[in-house]
Amino acid sequence: MSTANLTLHVDSFWVSPYAFSCFLALREKGLPFEIAEVALHHGDQRKPPFRDRSLTAKVPVLEHDGFWLSESMAIVEYLEEMFPSPQFPRVLPLEPRDRGRARQLMSWLRSDLLALREERPTRTMFYPARTEPLSPRAREAADKLLRVAGQLINPGAATLFGSWCLADADLALMLQRLLIAGDEVPERIAAFARLQWSRPSVLQFVEHPRAPFVAH
Ligand SMILES: N[C@@H](CCC(=O)N[C@@H](CS)C(=O)NCC(=O)O)C(=O)O
Image (cartoon, rainbow, N blue to C red; front, side, top):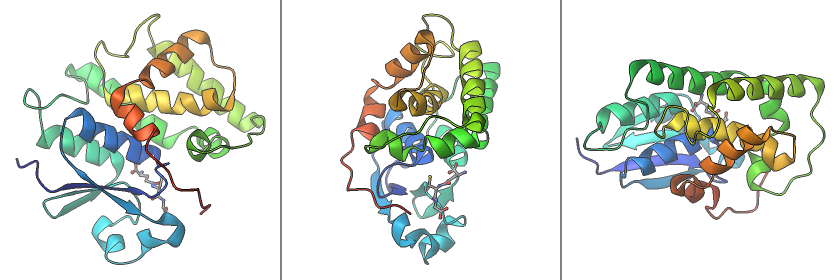
């Protein structure tokens, strides 16, 4: 399959956690790709042609040789199948149970912990922000996250499944919401998240230059 004509549509402030995952998948596979920034603060996602081509009117969208795909998990799976190992590095584990667990974790991180995501939005990870103490709802979500992370991260392990996969980075991003805000995180879990944050593909996303944020 041609690696030409790959474009990832992301929000123009680079704060989407879903774009983060897709950006990493492309980088880790070593695929050349263009970035197209969508001005969500101008509502460009709801204007044709982006609205109609994306179907969902949301970022991220992967554009590949004229094929448009939104929904970050669908994009990750598409890239994994279209650019498989051994020619391209894997971004999901090889062993079916590990792959199942990774998908479970990635789906769960996208669908649960809403109060935590609301009170520690990704914007606060990339732009200076004054953070309030977590509400009881968000504290409950944070405790759930820390319990799950504590069960999945083996003491001293750098990755969840023996070699790196996207679920490592997605879990680290969720944990970074707490770490960057100065919320308490047990050292074993914090060390895992910090290590993930030093990965070159992650740094490329985190350190990407950002225009001053406009709320939307
Ligand atoms: N389930 C989607 C979520 C995508 C999503 O919520 N994207 C946000 C940015 S983080 C967006 O495009 N918001 C614009 C809007 O809803 O109008 C995925 O995993 O890709």
